[in-house]
Length: 523
Ligand code: TNX
Image (cartoon, rainbow, N blue to C red; front, side):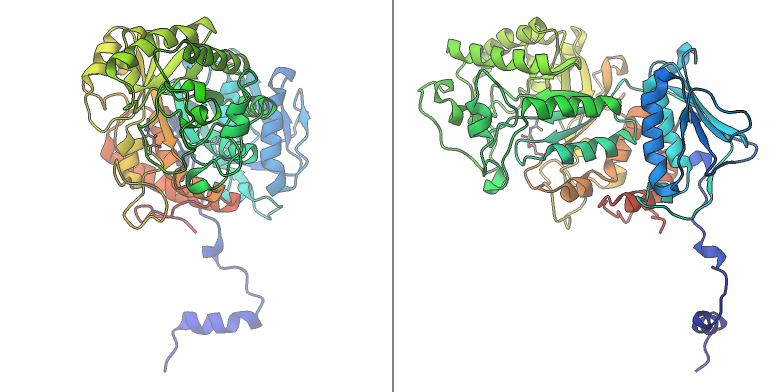
């Protein structure tokens, strides 16, 4: 048998000290490989090389972002990367420059310039600098996401990026109720989503199976509703103490993510009624539920105690939450009559305002005339919603989460081991191929605040489960929220190439992502 030359060479390799073949070099990073795609990218000139002598320059106001940048770059480079208020003359520098970056950039936009002598990120404030830092991380070789030092030439391709978001609201949601995810898991998810410039994390904190946030005036909500075994199939349990929640709010804010808490009502309240039977109409505690049925529980609309409960919960949650939104659910209230639903929302929507927050609810709340200053989260499958469109005409704003495109708990295809399929199978191209601004034919883009990718947890337990369903699709939703609209077919080709190149970054981070056959994954 004749062996081809390559095979002969391969056999000989262990005996010779041959240099690594060129094909072992990591794929070149280009200025155009960023996810989500920036507004404008102009490659030019020569690359910047990050070395052991590189200094991060940031004025005191930008120090928190500089700290995050240094923390992101130190593990894989092994460099000290000291942070100084001013760059020493002649040193290779990454400079963070806040203020006077131009009104067009808004609060979250940035300009990134890469020259041989240094990298500069300019923005109007720290949110924009942080966004620019996420872009810079993606312009370094993928090994920058390794947790231990790697011997790599840390080059950043030369040129200029100008960038700002299309939509103000770019969200992700975790369902803490069906399976409780710990503060450490939530923090890891915040790290992962903020890389893609997601700026809101919605936490679904109560449902039929469990209650996941401490409320001092109704303590049994958490101690009974968050007891061991209060998850789907009796798995898990737990709740966030107020200290946990405040710590999460702070952790998220450091990454320019705003927490949106949700208590779902008037349906999805079985766990609250198990803890406090007076919240049912007959005063009898229902049995705890660990199955995945929906639509069977309701608060008692005619009882005054219902509104004391709701006001106490809203007041305590609002006091814990610096962000503007408080989500009051409102979906699948099949055990509440239509008239009762309106009565309930007429009393409850003003309570959110009373405690200084903007009310946010699933699209069903748009049936209530009191929802005109609320935000409605569209989770339907259709491309028109007359009730929502009517509310929008009265002032309601919309966040787009169509379940057949944006629900990260939907299976990718029939063979996906986790997830549900009631809305659709959602492959990466399905998650990417729609436009949040024009999806609803009867809602104008001007009423769309943005987009959110919910991840319901009926079938998800571990952080690996979460990551497998969220990635890569969350990157698709993030791009729909951030990047300018362009012609969709060409976008997909560009997106799948950039996503394929991102795979090694997730691998370095230990993120268990789904290797979709639609994507040309780099090794
Ligand atoms: C519908 S979406 C629900 C949730 C489920 C989800 C599962 C929405 C507002 N309600 O109660 O967890 O489907 O995909």
